[in-house]
Image: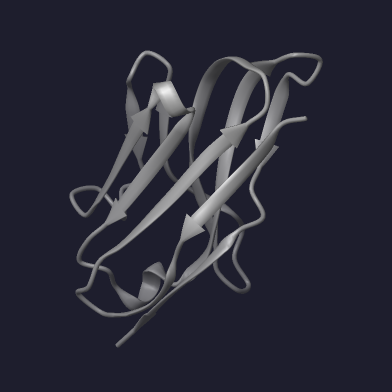
Length: 119
């Protein structure tokens, strides 16, 4: 059974930093894409950053230059380092992976982790 396990998040002052981590458990053959989305109250879920298995990384314009997504292929995990955080970064952050697995290929979401940035 495939699961995405998230860690990190919390409360930080504006200008501070946080790191989010996400690992995929299960019998994984290949991860096509993996990354983070976020959803603030009253807003739609939006892309933050995603990395493809070839290493190409895409970022939302709002986080470029501040957030860095890295991938550990050996551990089927990604890490999102968030610097210079702003109050508008406050949201629930969700890990997402599109992958091939034993009898469980598909698109998966983590349970979400809260990031709150105070002004």
